[in-house]
Image (cartoon, rainbow, N blue to C red; front, side, top):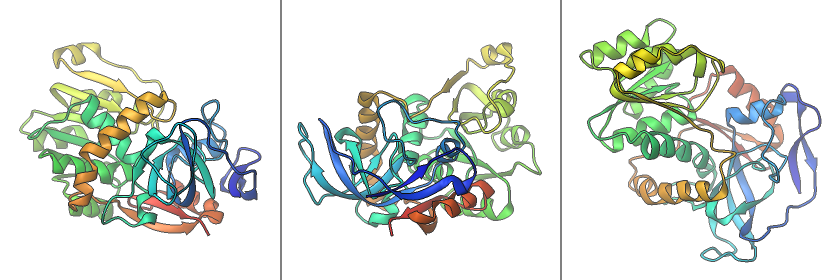
Length: 326
């Protein structure tokens, strides 16, 4: 088969479409013939040499894919050759075939194309596990999403609205904020021109956000705590603004607030399977009903993954960039 390999860490040009051995499904795994994958910022970090795959997983980038089951490994039930699926991966999505633990498979939702389905697993599992399973966003509460026009952001807006929450977003342009509004965002904040702490306080009558989904990390830590409501929950899922920040514990105590930080890629298989099962139970009906949909900015041939990485690095996209197997 062919896959995107990284001989040496570097820029987008380090991504090479190369011939490699076919994967073999092990106990509890299926082999998926990949139709499409999607680009996540973790892939950019891996390409640069900063985010190695977990031990035992595929060395190729790609944290999600869609396709058809080509082979069912030993110990697998409930899936058959030919089933159209999308999958959460620890790696290997930038390839023509990938071996996937059966617990990380999802059926392609009704009303979603096979190619579009590649844009779902990583972002939906990330949002559902952090915003709902950990932070317990409830109807009537306010969610603040940093990077509202990203793949994560576009899904977070839709899921929060589907459960009856109010949604605030930050983004870096009028055009991106308009796209967020089209998806249902209620409070639009241009982080280049406005202070999100003041804007969220003003929009909530001084209360603040009940849940904040943060991709920035250290750069936003202090302001995120100030933007939280009493009993607020800050869920950190990215470190684009650095890894070390100073925290005012007094402010955290006064608000009886909580901070959580998670990554998905390195979690044990049983934890990933539990998240995938919850997503299938709670999110897949919303996709079928048309209340939530994948937002795909563009499709690019997988053998031109370098161009896809350039697009994501320039941050001009809205939603996901999908890689289609040529």
